[in-house]
Image (cartoon, rainbow, N blue to C red; front, side, top):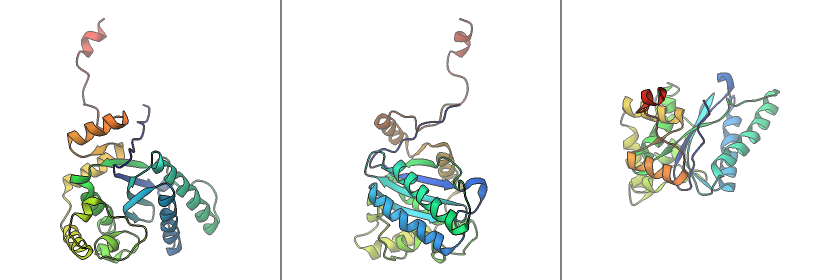
Length: 234
């Protein structure tokens, strides 16, 4: 079956999942994490993407970005990936590929899912039992979005800004939001949408995106198409 084309329209947030090949480590030292974030800032600026949230884990990473330039997302991922692989291979005296292949992604409806996606991304280290609290993990955007740590990389989305009139109010409300558990249904919806390259949002959002891009962002209906038996006998 042919792979579905990507849809990354300007102004629509997108969740990105990038895995290392064969579950090997893509970050093995503090300098690796720091280097990736340095180049993430450089290339996100070059290709005009706003980065709202991220987490770098030993063998994969998550990003939440909004492209402001047509084609900017894929250009950023390709340039960043090549730059980092050269660095990682040199640091670890290795050759060859590092990434699993095509990154996975899903479009995100801001009004309903933007903050849910931020929370999902930043709480990954807790779900993986790497830390007891997200604030203890240094390689995510949680310390910025929930604790107010200054950052030249993290660009707050309008939905985050609506949390309060001041930065302090925004961080306090986001912190309280992250203290609530993510429901299993929400976890499953995010994971399924990302793995299948679909959109996460209500039906009107998905229809709007399909009109914008000319690409399918909803799952195909299960079962045989209507009238298949008649067509089979003609």
